Length: 158
Length: 265
Ligand SMILES: Cc1cc2nc3c(=O)[nH]c(=O)nc-3n(C[C@H](O)[C@H](O)[C@H](O)COP(=O)(O)OP(=O)(O)OC[C@H]3O[C@@H](n4cnc5c(N)ncnc54)[C@H](O)[C@@H]3O)c2cc1C
Ligand code: FES
Ligand code: FES
Image 1 (cartoon, rainbow over the protein chains, first blue to last red):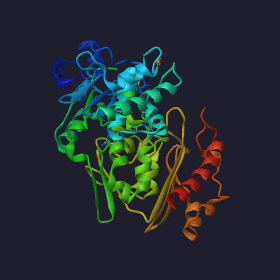
Image 2: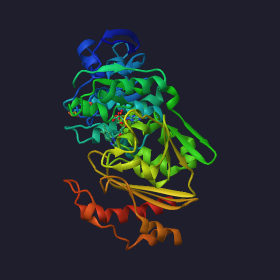
Image 3: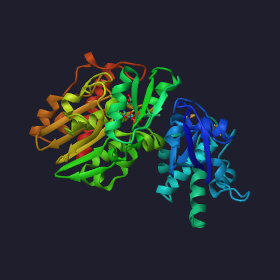
């Protein structure tokens, strides 16, 4: 069976997987990182979004073997010393979640947007969230959260 | 997903060899944004999955000699964000930017998109509308000969797309009516004024991308949005599904053609 090695949230990990093991299965089932969710399994909802080599991807639509050698970042890696990342803080402050199922994917997707565009407009945030579905909030507060998170990151020079 | 034997060749020659020796059970994977969902639904059962991801030479964009050449493994996001593509063929950058969502664009590749030949995919309109050439490990195939039908292309078993080269047009515009849920094309049109004449290619409407010769002739005489007014496409052979009737798609061809020409300026 294939062996994979990668860094996950900065830590080196190795695992034995099947060819067909999805990246999200490796993260959740083998590494115990259950912050990354599986909402649809049809590549549409974005609950499973993580970063691979700095880019947001759907971890349910990538094989674990395809991430061999990569740097993977998940929601668990954002907080430092028990302090939430400004984007997480912004979701809390702006009521950007209700059940919270979509939130890890929303936050990881938002952080990829901010990398390209430090000050996104409402329209740009809404367009960027094309691949992230939320069944609860109606998106309004998610958009507000992301703009507030981006502003906090600009302020903190991140 | 059924189990398969995963291979990650380091060279194009090795990939071709692996694909040939796997025979009917061999399948290439590039970005996986079409194939992995298909495997998850058990709609395909390859014995060997051959990952092109290690072939770094197949990714990248070159602009030279009046052509934009895009390596097969180049992602939709790379095409959309490429300053060189935005400058040479802005309509092609816009097409790539409109595919799916950011995460699909970060993984999905041009080679996978053209090889897959989904009737609702964006790239077929770009490839045919701009008169591109598809390069494989064995030969080159002109756009007009490449797409042969519903999910079918001129590729032979074991053939690997290596790049697509687009001649830089004088003008080109792309307009898409996306399905609001999936973002695939209900109908989309690439219209281009090229050194070899005007080309109008339609995706989403029929089983495979097609050109509208009557619009091309009218635009050849007068490159203006109004030139396509009144030119109708017959609904007889168009797609019909829960998203749109054939008549509606036929109507959208005219609307999207007009918008494509407006976008081209
Ligand atoms: C949610 C979602 C929304 C999407 N929306 C759109 C959209 O709006 N418009 C659109 O056009 N597409 C859309 N797509 C499809 C997306 O663009 C895919 O990336 C693309 O169709 C396939 O590219 P890939 O690199 O992912 O190929 P893969 O999934 O890896 O492969 C697809 C097929 O091509 C073959 N293949 C791959 N590379 C090669 C090669 N170099 N040579 C020969 N054969 C090859 C594979 O064997 C397989 O049969 C969407 C996908 C998803 C999941
Ligand atoms: S679980 Fe990956 S997109 Fe829904
Ligand atoms: S908060 Fe419940 S799905 Fe988004």
